[in-house]
Length: 109
Image (cartoon, rainbow, N blue to C red; front, side, top):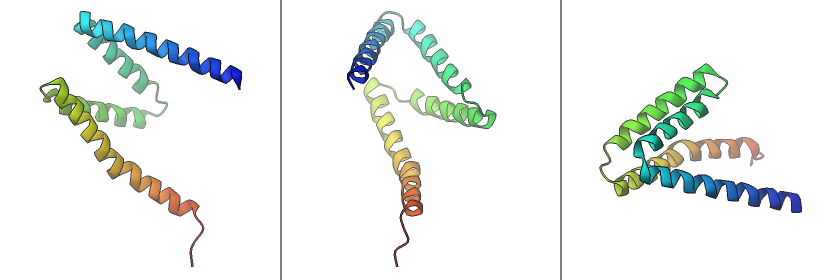
């Protein structure tokens, strides 16, 4: 258990270091930050094993960027992101969770 805790602390430390580095990049060189962000998104999407899934992820990313483009302010971007998250949660995740729950629970008579 102690090894897991040490690993957890190491992951946390590295994540905080990366956050600090990206925050500084965002403040000092917005263009370089945007280039890093796009490359990171591309790496994640292109790592999907299925071409159909990659296409779906690219479509979702394009939709996200289109919707966020017109936000105007950082505060509006945050509000939009929260709105999109909760809409997706209630429209997609909850029905899927409920379906799995019904499938996994024994039939009630």
